[in-house]
Image (cartoon, rainbow, N blue to C red; front, side):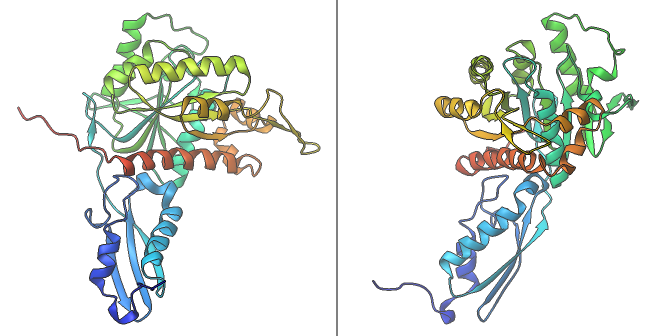
Length: 364
């Protein structure tokens, strides 16, 4: 078979630029050359070096994007030694929703029922994205049972500056919760319109600044708050958390169906408490069964974003308000990081397949 590969003498910077045009930015889904993300291109002899600019939104995918681009170039120019360096590419967030929230992605973490660890998963997702280098906000919209302040161990209350509520900053996360405003142990007894009003205020009156991600801890079930989020932030994505047993999967199915019905894109499912690792013998015990969420996700044609083990140490960290310490635990950190990367990878895959249209500003 005839070999059509270029010889060294034939390769020019224009050839390289043409190949780079085909490579899509993880965040925008558009060509990296179109968006000015290629810098310092040097082609000398058998060596090619470039610098790729990536936004902080894509921080969890930095290394795999570097490898992906190097492989993309290697397919066209197999005779070259290729080096890809990374740099930060600045790109401001477009305004989202009727209040002009400056967030590139909103991820609503929901569950069909309570008790599956949804709030912990929301906090883990926010922490993981932040640790990777993203700018992250965490909104505790579980108004009936706001547990985020306890899990994060923050007793602080938000300040008000220039009529804007300042989110409480915890380990680099910008956090807002009803739990900051009600005494411990007091119940929130509200009907639908009051819930909608509270979510509206959290989004409109909080000084979130510029975010790559706003993670929203939703109330369990299929109620008013999810509809409010879909109305106020129609570009939001949804992640559904469940445990492996059949009764939890039934409720998770309803949650997915509701999210799809109110036109929130379902990013995928996460299975929490997939198995228990005995601290004494390191043996794996599937207390609630295992793999149910992965099977259900396949049946409903939604992505599966990962499984998380049930560990006594992680429960103790949450009770102590030190949930971020789970990332220092070698037994659970790989599962947490895999979930975070899978979530961003799924978002990126969708954007590369169908790049989002820019929001058009309506002029008065």
